[in-house]
Length: 85
Image 1 (cartoon, helix red, strand yellow):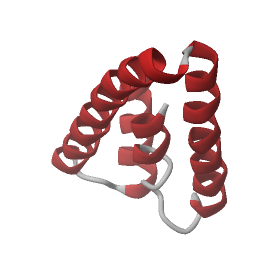
Image 2: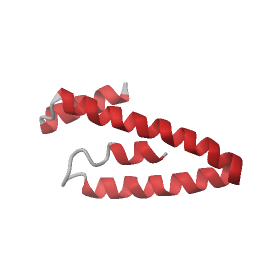
Image 3: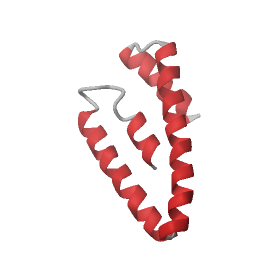
Image 4: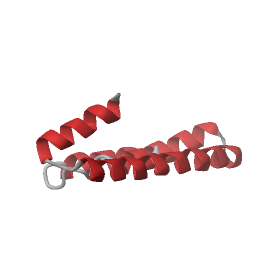
């Protein structure tokens, strides 16, 4: 449901074509899948708590950078956090 609302808002506010939105969300979900696989490997190596710390810290930094640049580039907040957390 969240993807649909975000896609609708990008379509209405910025006029982004549906094809382009589909491509962006496809890439975001592929990055998210790779992130989960990497987190499982990392958890086996350094432990669950360290994995949570070392994966959420960069994700939160990306989110803060994305919020700052949101008004400059409309699609910046979408791929960054999804690919890291």
